[in-house]
Amino acid sequence: MSEPPAAGPGFTTPGFVGCYRHPERMTGIKCQRCHQPICAECMNAASVGFQCPRCVSGGRAEVRQPRSRFGAELRAGGQRATVA
Image 1 (cartoon, rainbow, N blue to C red):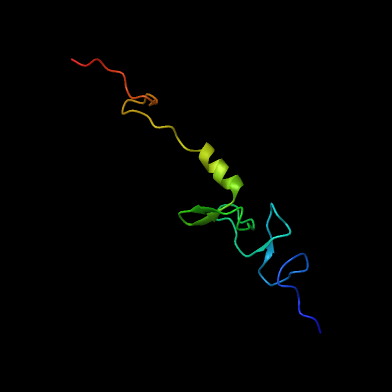
Image 2 (cartoon, rainbow, N blue to C red):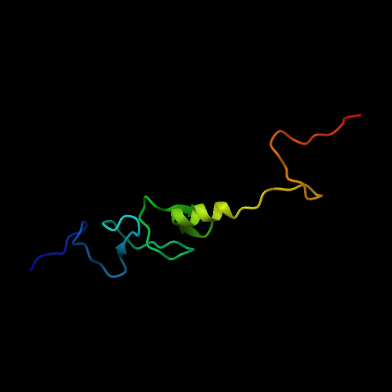
């Protein structure tokens, strides 16, 4: 009887599957948003666990731009005002 390999293409363990971006890398970690398996290279730390690169980039696209109290967009370099 031979032992199953500890890593590599023949590696099988219950609960471990291949990373969605790197199928040859076995992992037990899933993205907190989309629940796809991710390896250590693909993990991005989040406040509630780990997220895959696709969810992180999608989350950045949804970030709202800062606005002033009156609704104007805030720009780099500060606000322009007349100093008296």
